[in-house]
Length: 294
Length: 294
Image 1 (cartoon, one colour):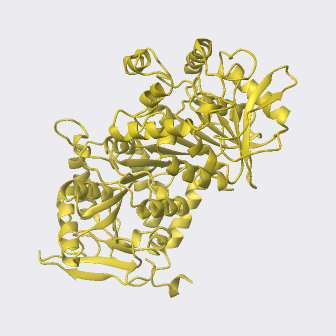
Image 2 (image 1 turned 135 degrees about the vertical axis):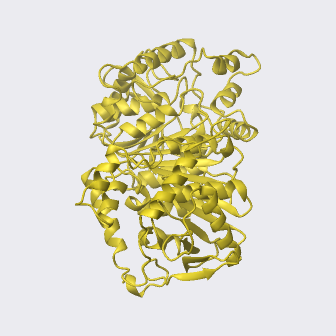
Image 3 (image 1 turned 120 degrees about the vertical axis):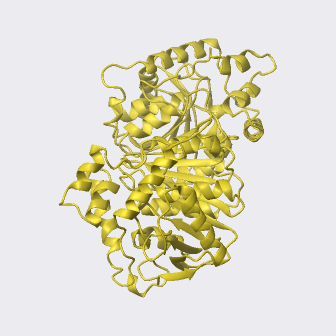
């Protein structure tokens, strides 16, 4: 364990945890306080470097924030699983090796699917969940990068690296795109100790996991009914990557969930409205009630 | 104790305002602080006495809260208009007579429709809006009391007066019904200076207004696009009286709205989760941002 911890994702060192399953996992752990640690699970192709300090750092003022690269992402070893369940197994191996038996979870997009799987399969480990820009199993139109609204910017050579993120994570308005530019600017100050960006194999495996997550058997969304963890569901309603109706389904079928939707924003609503989001998340995580409303 | 508090709907005197249009309006005005007054517009058949002190009183700690009985309700004179626009005209006459040129508005159910009409027709008078358990013009399944889920409790002789409110404003769960009983208990301490309850003619006219509000011409919800007031939309997602999809439409079509939905609750979600609701409402009303997220 490193002795130096700075409470920002701009400066926190990347650590490598060697787990008993033979995998090594890249992660960052920073902040402190009396609250339970908050495990942050990342979006499609994102690494530790894609977590906005404007989101992680305020949350780290009251608790440890743990950012995690799943298998095959960044410097974490192995192949990217082609199912959410497979990714969840890596999260559990990581937590087990850390000795963490209970935590809160912030799952963004793909990370929100893993958080749901965790809550369903290991309800005693997850206390409260924040699900941002994500979808339930059996959800619709999850990360269909081939549809024109996404394929066009993704294939446009003028958008590369972070600029494509700005384009597709934010709504096509002046205000949202400006928020996207500010988000990108907040990622740039970390110049050392960065994770290698994800390549096409990562994308391919994660897309396979999305396709598998869209499938369901039996009663649709029935799996959510048993997840009683207090949950905060958040989404920008211009989300082209995972449409907001998926968050409606989450909040309608999870028995103990509050939904917040943000205007003028897309997939990256938590980054656009980072002040509101961290205030809401802090209040939600700070509640000891068995009810989700906070 | 409640009885010694002045800034409370339990004890605030009912006042009568004589307006230049010949109408007299019953209202209560209490609380204080530097924030703009908050005008509260009530639900179907509700009077001043139906405002939960657990909602009004915390809000009155930073601002004046003004509760209003529209024409034909309680001790307000005249007939109940059969359109939301007609009710809005009475609100405007009341504000004009009070000399209020700018305020925040909390509109619950029918009151939320009036609030929308005000924001659309008089955008400079309304600063921020909170719309709870309501629907846009062109919304669906608005207060169809003839449908079995509502007709059954409404026609059941075991439910009368406040007990029918508990039944239909709260979800059919032990926790929500208990919250409903607590809500009713908070309405009872006001024993003097109460408004006469609404009779069948009030209900008939207001139902006519709901039917008119369901109609639309041209592009559905287009009228919301021009309403740029920061808006907080709130709904319990078990709402049988005005289903939650109406709040989805509101937040998707109002350009500057945040949506919060509450679990395990119905039409009276603001009363069930009064601590959360007043905290969220206070933060929302306290924001000076041009953006709704707070």
